[in-house]
Length: 314
Length: 114
Image 1 (cartoon, rainbow over the protein chains, first blue to last red):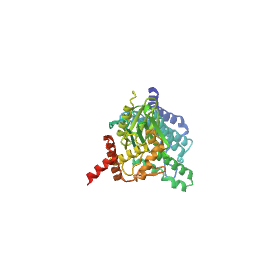
Image 2: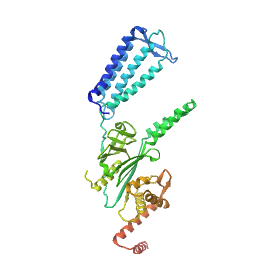
Image 3: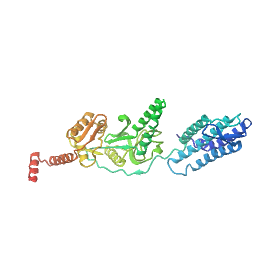
Image 4: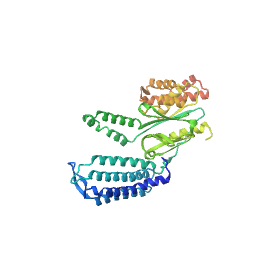
């Protein structure tokens, strides 16, 4: 997402400042309706068992939301490229939103009460959800990240006149990715036993869909490049030789493309299944194609040779 | 894996089978590896899918690959045979280039073997 620099700055730096104002403001506004000691800790029984004076609670939340929010923004560009600015910038805003909604929610739950109050489940989960959404939205507007990884030298290849050379290879996700996905299946028996078979089934479907796009098969030849993924290879990416302006191999970082799997981003399409070598194909017209594939240097060499042999000015 | 279809005017399915044989012989394709999907190879060579399938079937009949629906063609063995067949292919191609007829070539082989 490309947004004007002023909007970006306003969101990233404004949110923590706004959080402090809202936290302080809500405490002042609700002061007359609140008990002197605000519930701040809940035990296993579900009722609050610890309290804090309103001023302490407000200071704590305001310091965390504003301080951490701004600290994260200042660290945004110091922790390394290309992923960190997004993650750090997003989390800074997300934390400010989470802590603000949590603070206001606790005050509202404690309004007109004396003594212990039940654990405000809705407030806690709702604030986390809002924080997570804010993290994602803020991360999306952080300065567009540099996607190009370290270039790899293409393996040169000679093609005799009349010879047809085809390269075929594949890219597979790292072992930990598979294990992570296998882990999502662990709760399925529990969900089924708990009378939620549909949730279990949904989890299986989501897991299977994710698994099906963690493998890519790429064929490079005189006609260009074809890549397949998905169940039975039904998802296909294709670039005809005449559409390609240039190709090279480079190290691809999934986080620079917003994650793993099928990628549909402004100016780039493709399939990113792991960190490592991949093909980057620039088209004359339209989005680039990115494919993580083993031995990408060789694949790039074959495609470059075909491009050179086709003789079209590029 | 790299498949090189030699520039000659033999039937296309033969050239495809020969290219796979050579790749196996050169160690470019290992046992257990899968060949490109027929439709993708057909796409890249600008030929009919059935032509590629015919080449793959030939390799199956030679015991080099196994064809299974939905899984495509997998190299299952017969690497030594493929290497020998590839060497014969190269010998024949060189003889044809030099204008040496096949019976003369046979004589030459027998002469060398004795």
